[in-house]
Amino acid sequence: MKPDIRWLDDPQTFRVGQLPAHSDHKIYANMNEMERQQSSLCQSLNGTWQFAYSVNPKSRPTDFYKKDYEAGHFDEIQVPCHIEMAGYDKLHYTNVLYPWEGKVYRRPAYALGQDRTEAGSFSEADYNPVGSYRKVFDLDKGLIGKRVCIRFEGVEQAMYVWLNGQFVGYAEDSFTPSEFDLTPYIEEQNNVLAVEVYKNSTAAYLEDQDFFRFFGIYRNVTLYAKPMMHVEDLWVKPCLSENLTSGVVDVQIQISRALSETAQSKGRVKIVLQDRDGHLLAEASADASLAVKASLPLTDKVTLWDNKNPYLYQLLVTLEDEQGNVVEVVPCAVGFRRIEIRDKVILFNGRRLIINGVNRHEWSAEGGRCITMQDMEFDIECFKRNNINAVRTCHYPDQIPWYDLCDRNGIYVMSETNLESHGSWQKMFAEPSWNVPGSVPQWKEVVIDRARSNFETFKNHPSILFWSLGNESYAGDNIEAMQRFFKDKDDSRLVHYEGVVNNRAYEDTISDVESRMYARPDDIIEYLENEPKKPFILCEYMHDMGNSLGGMKSYIDLLDRFDMYQGGFIWDYIDQAIFVEDKVTGRKVLRYGGDFDDRSSEYEFSGNGIVFADRTEKPAMQEVKYYYGLHE
Image 1 (cartoon, one colour):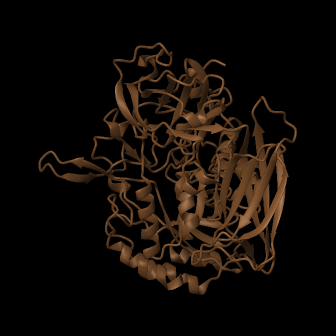
Image 2 (cartoon, rainbow, N blue to C red):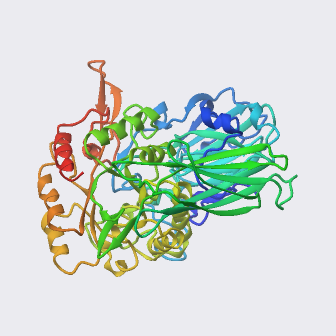
Image 3 (tube, rainbow, N blue to C red):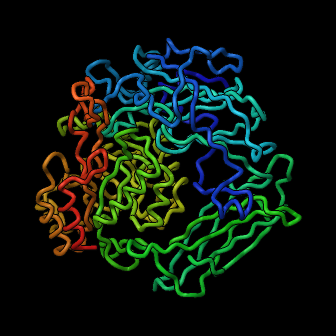
């Protein structure tokens, strides 16, 4: 297949040549590698890349992907990094409005009628910056002779990929991994990887989050090799008995084989379940067919996973060849917990769930949404010392290590799908004249695909209690279809969505909870005293902008009055501000929206966290720690 720049304009083209989304499990060649957490099957491509910036598609270097292309005039850029943070394009913060509003008239394809394809909206735009990346690399020894794939963990917003002059694929969805099989084109040395990244495509209508509008390769890029047998996907489902004392771990494994191997059973798969201290609890083995299922019962009393005691069992999957040699080792942390609704109250491990939560953008004053492991570890520690027990990943999936940290530290997660389209409908609270995804047929598959990527990637994490369908995207048939997807796939979690408050026609078919933003205490009382249908969660409240966050007591008091009130998530955790050098003093200072001549902008609205952008706690954190500490 040849790449087509018109894919940028088509909401029905959002993945070409991509591998299916799958679990985020790690892979190792043997037990020793797993114990050292160093895999010979993986090779990082982070670092220095060749780079060229173009202001629009017409001015981009169209032949840059060819292996013999002379790229001596290209600049250099670090990967991962936002292109804007490397000094190209311009910094721009906006909340509701799409970044082109007031400059260019645009409407989503098909939103104003089935004949309105809006051809050329992005592919022919005078302003739609393009980043052209090139990386020359040799294969590490552990990858040679194996099937080789590439994983881009995060690229905003649309990208085309070539290897050694051959087109590999196209991807959107900026916040979940995009993977491609490089095997047909990979060489041992002097590989030329080319990636063309566009700032805007139809995905922009679905990624209208309240944040700075960046683009580029801003998360890790990794090659990984599949041995002769490889665990493509792993789903580990710990199931608790009704009395919460015993359980069984159901395991589903998809295995692929190299083309030289037959698809029939050849070799063995061994599955072992251990406790936290490494003691064997259960095991199973089977022929290594393409699909393996097993159930591992626990005979001893189960230790439950929760915020106070995030107890994790360890599951280990080992693939062996016919001679008993280890081919691949895959570990997976397992946590036993149950979330359910009984008598209209959310119960967690049989007790009422109270959410002392925050919304959290990924953010660094130095790197924007390109954050480090140290940033994430700091945030977890900040949560724990301030009695924060839950996080909503607003409004997209986070980096993979964040979910591991939440598993290990007992942080309850609302895992949000990458969807926010409030710029398409939020117009003075009137009935929207147009909205995507809405009920527009051509926008259905793209949002289901985003839900699928969220689910498939993170399904094994015990910290995830809720799947969220996205944020502020109104409600229609397509979001209803996302709800059905999660319900059909996963009966061990609840589904959340706030937007039905704006379109009650869907309140019986979207969301397990009544979720609202910034409802006054009296509004909550009115709902809960008038035959409520669902338990109540504030997905956003206590908007912490400037010297605010007063009145928290009036919300916390409701926890003692109403069992169906389950708490909420403060908006939000961290300011979005960027360190710059002040021209007058020469000092490094924080600058917010509007400080970069960015228009339109919601200005200092980017700063509403309980910590500053440099992660210094604000005085408001004292209020949070005290009141959240009353209902730990």
